[in-house]
Image (cartoon, rainbow, N blue to C red; front, side, top):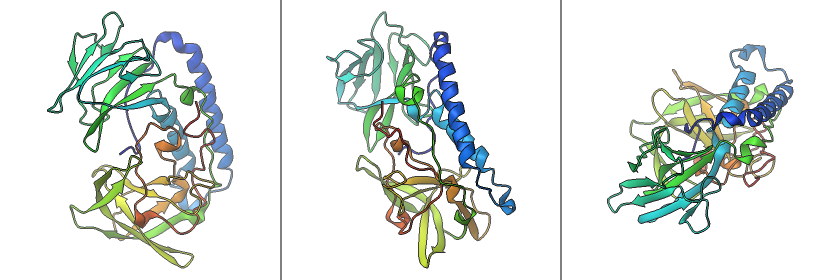
Amino acid sequence: MDVRSDNAGEWGTRSRVGRRSRLRRTIAAGLCLAGAILATPYPAGAAEVDLAGVREERLARLTKPDGWLTLIGLHFLREGPNTVGAAPGNDVVLKAGPDRVGTVTLEAGGRIRFVPAPGTGVRVEGREVAAAELTWASSATATRVTFGTASFFVIDRGGRKALRVKDSESPRRTRFAGLEYFPADPGWRIEAKWEPLPPGSTVPVVNVLGQTSPEPAAGRAVFERGGVRVEMVAIDEGAEAPLFFVFSDGTSGRSTYGGGRHLYAARPTGATIVLDFNRAENPPCAFTPYSTCPVPPKENRLPFAVTAGEKTYQGGPDSP
């Protein structure tokens, strides 16, 4: 399930200074846009909520050299050898890199081996090797194969193994159109009743591939809006992480992304939890077709319009 972070890769070569400068100008323009949108005053009573800082951090995270905008491919592996490269004759055809990067072999027992093509400068974890095993415990620790400004690593989706491919010079990143928001509105900073669930509770979550997985559920945020009672379920990503809500609402598919949005909230210490929908953000799938985002569970499909947070990305997931 693709959610907030996916750390991988590095900047390309030092010869990319000019392109980096253009990207910095793009990011700076996006920050100015975010600042302009924040001209609507935020309540003095909620001064602890640094909305401008939150949005600047969001923009920096999204546009970083290994962020979601760098995805250029998602290729599921078949059992046995899979040739990988930019040439059309490969089993896995990449959008960047040499004609042949190498061969990835998915063994019957689930082990994955990689043999780089000779003379291409392909590196595994920063080193040139004759062969290597590719691990995939998590996106943050998966073995990286790099070639120029591009890279790939293995992910697991419902027991199926795939290569996730990134390029720091992806047009989605270098031509990023910036983020747009609804005006900041204190009315969408809601103090909800917190109802914790028993340890070990789960909620079935479907991703955009149609795969269902039981995700740890921490509890429910209960509140009323316009006379409508909702009980939003929070996904638990670990004791040190904020709680995670995947939701849709009356703006979905209109002024906001059709697949819903994401919201993170600080873990409650008492009987209430603060849901600041001004912090709602688009999922990775709003920016790239190569992500595998979760679909909002039925409890989180809100029957009213949440006119706060990020709007639809104007570049769209299928933009270059």
